[in-house]
Length: 442
Image: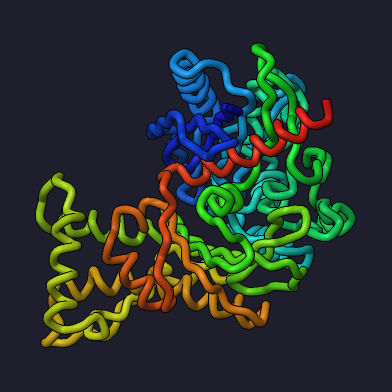
């Protein structure tokens, strides 16, 4: 038995699993809300407390290790795009600027935003680490004792190993933007020409790697992206499966062995040493459904969760009128990567379909429509279609109607993985492979 712990630092939760990576069996699991968002006087900023997240993970690790013994390795994954600064001792000297941070869309003195200033350098959007860093540099808001940038999951891995210098893998580095996928490095020269101080960027390591060991001698893997980890933890056949992940945001992922130049709402990300992932990511996604539930609660003046009633009303509407009679809802309420100013809209409202169920069905279909349009772009780029459909994330798991409508839209049955903690499980499987390789080379 090879016992590997997988840790996923999400936008709202931390998930930790212990898996036997030889059999794939899950031995233990724990998921808690980290409640680490910080108040900011600037509405565009979406900040979290990295030290709170670190302490929560330390406590969870101690609990699971006490109950299950020391693991043979620890795998890390977490929310992508975001960044924080560390000092020469490897300690955080800033909050975590999450992927939701909107600083990159604030116009500067010349009227342009940092996202616009870096568009010519490579993939760059508000919330991407390099864009956020450039904004903070422009505004002279980088902490004086900061020496390097890192991601939240790489930061926690570094702290567990008591390292002082952060390193980053290609998954996370590419998520910061302005990254050369072929060379596996940041576009240093172009960034410097644009005025970005690149001295804060960490060293990029290729492939999957260990960053060090804990005090107990447990090897710790450098973080992989949560998109990649969810794929590894959800999909059996990487080549022929399209994966829908609906959580706070939403993503559609499709693996290709070809390097493809992308633009607009579809981007290319690292996957394995011989493949890439085409990814379409919506900024609102599953959050749109949670917003709708909150809207219904405000209207009803209740604190009781209304998801079950929403499902029931939506099912009854479809049974009586059909799904095509639902309202047409554009759920890009937070804009898109390529157009942050875009806002959602609702059309198709008539006397005959003026029902809450019509709105609920419309929001579900709106979430799925955005992902399906991105998937169709991927099919055009690759010249192939998926033969299998997989679904992950709480939006898929807890919403049977969303699963059914996705199957109808994508014209394939959906397979939902056995374990809910897909990203943490995928990180454990990846770290398990590294442990196996290390044992074989001993």
